[in-house]
Image 1 (tube, rainbow over the protein chains, first blue to last red):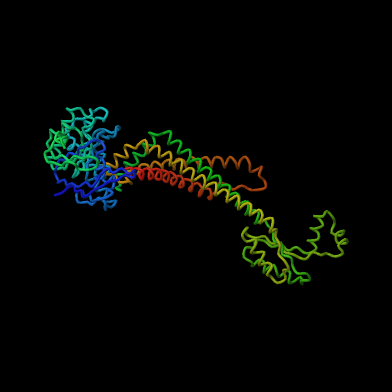
Image 2: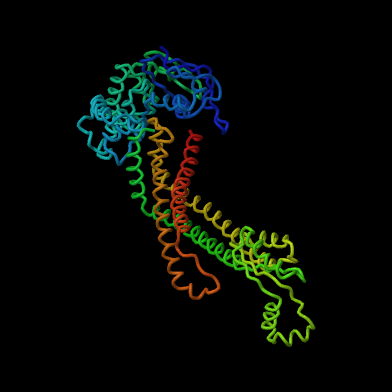
Length: 232
Length: 300
């Protein structure tokens, strides 16, 4: 089953900048995909289009069976809830505990308290933070904070996890641990799309790599690596 | 929106109000001031209305009877006059009484007046008072239509001029209130916008985890309503205190008009002020948030 499908997608911003130029690609359910490219290559725009923060200027985007250019308001909310987002800067609420931060994502979707109390510890265990449930973000390392963000992104059981430079602020050790978590999540069936320019991680994971350059896909290969891209 | 979310909204609203306590106080003060001025103007309008009514209802209509009207016909007219809607009191003034009154006004005796005039030129008349101010003109019209009545007079011009003036005062009051309402919505909106900006990251996160716009709005809306309610309570207390003090101090000075006592009309004004405060607060917060949510939507 196709989870993400782009056909001839272009995005031109109001200032005239062409961020994506006729991009076509397909991502199957359960895949792990690296989105690579230098800054300004179009990675962030692509992620924003998938989350439907931006609307494509041209082309067709179907995510999880939803045509994002024709999506209605109510559907849009469902669409966003079917995706988990993780950012380089974690974006945690500093005044809430780890538990409350993760629970927050369930609260805003109006889940029952009982379900929240049951689900949050489960997901904290998946990311290996069961013992930190009562801590505040400021008491955690960067790696731990990012794992909280991943737990929050996953707590509503999204079909797709999108991570935008999740290891950008982490040291190699923490980055490796985070990748382990993402791999575990992917092994359980969640589609993972990760934008990065961490060459060593891409090389090590040996997953599908889609390389963007100036808004176009210049490379798309299963089990590829970053070093090979340099030759293109 | 599910009910259980609302307990959370209230908690969040009270947290944000306490966290930005200075901003909260500023907003409450702004709303209180606006509502107080609205209240003051309502009270002024109320007093003006009463004043106008007092004046108009004391206006007497003089119905001059035709000359040489037989005495019986003249006295029978009183029944027809009493039958007119809106007539309060009717008094017969004979031509002799009229002459006597005139003589008193001119500080002469009726006899000297009569000798200098040759004969009594004044007709018999009825002095009619109306139930209310609104009745004066129609009553006068109906009096004139009666057989035997030559003319019905009341001080149209003076009263009309006064009413014209009162109308303009009312318009001015309404315009001032409108201006203040807009100003206070803008100030509340601005204040809430600052609060919203201070919670920007939280709002962004809410959107990312799939919160609906209303889920984001409600806590701010409740915070606005609470501020409006507090502002309303303060304004009502101020107005009540100030007005009772005013009556105490000035009712003896302002002898020409009797002031409205704190009565049921006041409770309407108070109720309106509270309701209006709540509306003002929520309108301000929704306005600022809407601008913000739209801005976000555009940037994204």
